[in-house]
Image (cartoon, rainbow, N blue to C red; front, side, top):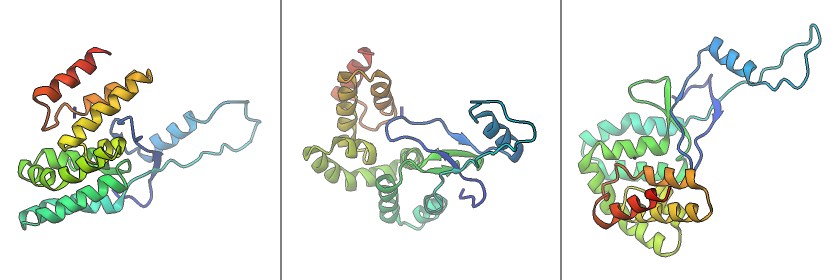
Length: 207
C-alpha cells in the first residue's frame, strides 16, 4: 500500500520503519484528559498534592507544511523541477515529521506519506520525479545503501527493490510485522507489476 501550530505540538513521531496512523489534534480538554490518563499511577497522591501534567507536542514541520501549501501553484506555473527537488529534500531530511492533512487541518500525516501522496496523485509529476531520482537511487542501492533508498526514494524502481530487500531482511530476523509493513507500502507503487509484483506476493505469503 502504499500546521504549523506554535501553541500545540506533540511528541508523537512516526517511526522510520513503522508507518503510523494519522494523528488528530486534540482540543484543550481532551488533551488534558489524555495527558492525565497517561500519567503512571505508581502511588496514590497525597491530599492536596498537585498533579503535574506534561504538555503534549506535535512534532510538525512548518517548512514542510509551506512546501505542500505552495506545491499546486508551483506546478501550475510549470516549476515541476523545483517541486521535485523540494519533495526529495523533505524525503531525505525530515520524512517522519508531521504536516496537516490538506482536507482536515486537525489531522496530521508524516511528511513521507504526504510527499508520496502528492506524487502518486499527479502522474506527470511522478514521471518527472522518477526520471530524475531513479539513477541516484540505483547508484545508492548498488553501494549497499538499501535502507536509505527504501526510506527516501521508494517510488523509484530501485526503491521497490530496496523495499523487497528490507522486507527480506526483517523476515530473516523474525520481525514479521515490520516486514509486512515494508511490503504493504508497495501496494500503490508504479512498478508493482511483473516479476517485482510476484516477488512481493511471495514474501507476503511467507507471513
